[in-house]
Length: 195
Image 1 (cartoon, rainbow, N blue to C red):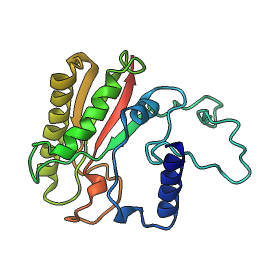
Image 2 (tube, rainbow, N blue to C red):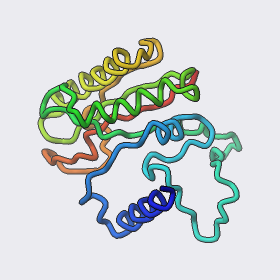
Image 3 (cartoon, helix red, strand yellow):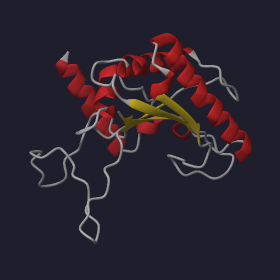
Image 4 (cartoon, rainbow, N blue to C red):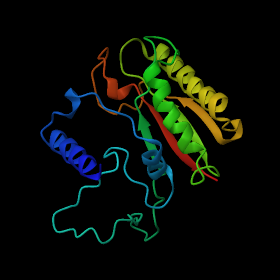
């Protein structure tokens, strides 16, 4: 089984390097991958889905990034651990599809795990550029609220641990012109807010 996981990871790396990864449907991370991405100190980048490429000459000995210092010598705050999920909704609505609930079930397991149970999270809804910006803003807010409600109802995640926010098309993952559908931009971001 480990052999298959390594081959799958290497194949994903090869496809990404070849620019072919967009042609394949992306899968959402498992509960354990989400735990690793969302826990503080050493969280992995959500863009690599658990694979951290080494820079040329890097031995991999130091894997924890340190915050960069500014010109005054003070440390800049480290980015909060976060994960991007592809959450499918029925077109133009807040109705979760079966694929969406499968992804949210993994998130619910992660948020109720021992490793993350003491942390608070922000659920941020994003849209692509199809439609007008006002409608997209409202839709992203409603979708973030739908995700929050699902996690509260199905997994018993306390309302006090979750915030929801919609940002519409204002924070695109992939820059596109107006009225351009892009699945990568229709996402939900989960951010660890701390304890």
